Length: 221
Length: 93
Image: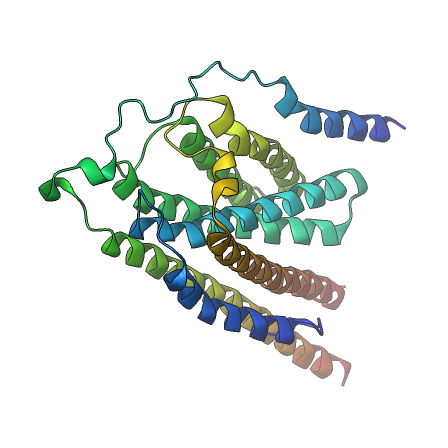
């Protein structure tokens, strides 16, 4: 994997070290009193959704920029962020399901938070499908989907406060004790670094593809 | 001009949309109808370790697979670029 960014390798090493240390930090974190061991899924579950929030925001901003300004780089950033959103969303849904199996006794519950998170995932899967199979003009159609995906995200976040749901409210994070906070902040920083690294690699891939297409067209001319 | 108006309109709708959503008057208690885990009989309690291990293992497998796909796609594009450069070199000779 190659990239022209100078910061890529040092950040890659730092992220790898942080990921290697994260299981130790999680194992040393205190047990939550009601859920005990299974609550430790939280230390990857929460950072995943934080990273997803960032990738959705990046995708939405880049889609707006591409749609209204036509910036090619914005389109590449948007598609890279959309793909990352799908990956993080998949892990968020699966880890939540595994946690829910123990905490709620069911793998899945069609409540507001879970259903909206699932719909958000479907919107971004739709984004990628449109990009792959949509043909000419699919980039603009996908950008519109990216914007609507971004508009859905605040509803996903606030759903636990607005509707009755089995999922804990957003305020539960603020009730954590400091020794849990340090671990969750550490894991969140690790996930955000990972997201930045993958985003850079994916944008590089899209840029190389665009350059390849340009060179093929120049050769044909 | 119209483009700016559209841009402002879309931005406003996106930012204001959550404010228009109606919060329902739900009960503050979210524990109604639930039995605390520590009150379940031992036979009905579920071991947490396999679920915890499954979650972290799934993350590891998913990330390894995803990074492999990126690496694979990058390698393919770079190979195509080298091939194209070779063809261009041949064409100019």
